[in-house]
Every structure is written in structure tokens, then in C-alpha cells.
Image 1: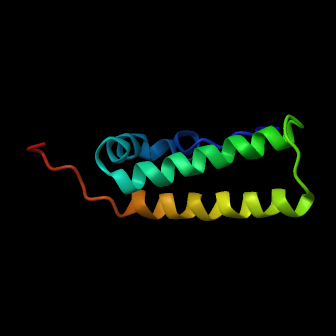
Image 2: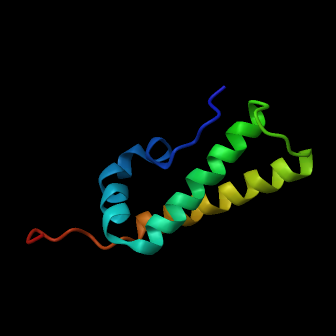
Length: 85
């Protein structure tokens, strides 16, 4: 089972946009970092490195899904790169 869900693997077709946003958009970078910290926390719980109740893990997964949706929204609505950049 694939327990980690990195954004670059979730949206490989948007790899260049994700990298550009991480380097140029502080808001995107903060949400991206929050998503990956949450993903790491979920991984640790699922691997029984850390403990959480069923309700806690479900809340974490729901939060991760919402962040993923929001990141996808930011990616899809990112300004195109102009030829002069």
C-alpha cells in the first residue's frame, strides 16, 4: 500500500507549475508544506510509529484531502509562464 501521497506524485502532469509556485508563491509554499507535514503525520500513524484514535486519523485524512483539493485549485489557476520569463 502506498502510504505517502506527495503532491508531485499526485499531479505529475503539473510538475513544472508546482515547482515554479513553490519557488515564487509564499502562500502556495506554506500550504504545500502544511500538506506534506500532514501527510508525514498520517504515514507515521499508519505505520504505528505514532498513535491516534480512529477519529483523529480520519480528521487528519480529511484535512489532507481538503489541502490537496486546494493545492490543485491553486495549480490549475496559476498564471501561465510568459515567454519573456
